[in-house]
Length: 528
Image 1: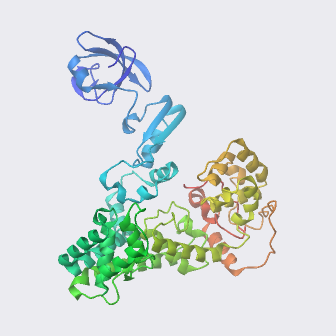
Image 2: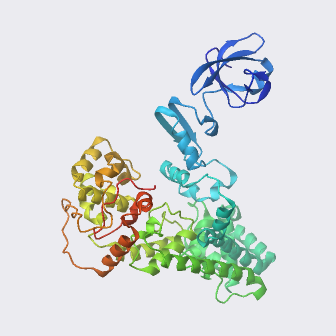
Image 3: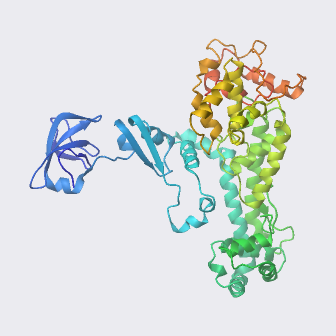
């Protein structure tokens, strides 16, 4: 139902409804109802860029009933070119960054985005990671910003299809599926049916549990390795009660092997299972797994070779602070991230927290290796930790803190009273629970020119004054460090002062420089 003065939108082209000599009623046109007629026809005025025009047309009742809708809401694509005083956007989380930009620039005075973090309720949702570890609104936004909707040329598509870092994630997924299917096929349907029947006898309804397909493959893997799956299952059931668990199959799967390796052998990557070393099967049965294992290993080798050859100009931002330290660690991190689909825009070296036991253990191992390198107290993230901890202890625990700390350090070197500005910005209103460091830095509104002028020579480091020692920090002795010098020299070589394109678009190469020898880093050059 619509009345005089309502905004409406036509949803079908109709060349018979003319708008002068060169135009007609089209899908997506917006109108204001001028008059409603007794036969359900309406007289409407064309709206362009949020304002009524002089174009008037009468829409017949049949067209109104079928193809005229209220126009207060529109899809993102149809809203391009439209502006309003305030825009409210309902997001699904599947939008691209281009669509998000369009949606959040329709309002002249304010733009608000809303997104549901709950699952859609589809049948397969329970098997997904968000069902057990729901994404927050900020995490949904990260996924939207990571999704590039720009069309790619055929050459770009071919390059991406051949890129090992893009191929290995899917290759690992296929390998794991092949491994589980091989175990089930190797022991045969008769033995699998026996396992299913006895499983339901031991724990009524066990085969209906969401995680039973995983438990079934685990039992098949035990059988492939020569163990008795029924005996192992009985032992796991008898270990403790199951009356209070919501998914007994998941609990039993963990009891059979708490490491998350599913009682299997080593795989092509340190965090992937493989065939048991003493698998009781034929070569023909395990040939598909071995073929997939070789593919993963070859792709990992290619990624490793590429990562070892990275320079400050070619390395992704997450890796630049580690260049010149431990090339094997950088290569291992590159393989880890690519195999788990971690985008380069995620500045955390190991990406999001992993929840499966075997992946979590390896992620913690990588963290310890990184800490051995980054524990130098002269890093900005350590120099400024005491300052921000007095403001809000959550700031230094933000995953974006190392990046933000480098910008704070650059601002201090530029002579800005950064401690006072941080305190004032934090006191304006409470910091959010998610990404408090990034939110705090955004409130400062420090422009690039405030940190360094346009004529600053990025290749010189002896003219840059050292950053003031933050309150509560301890000044370290200025000891020569060959690793730091190597990093600094590499960065200097990669950032010539006359390379305007590089210095404009990739000026964060020294974000993680632990020795303060680089020119100030522009504050807001962060690609979130």
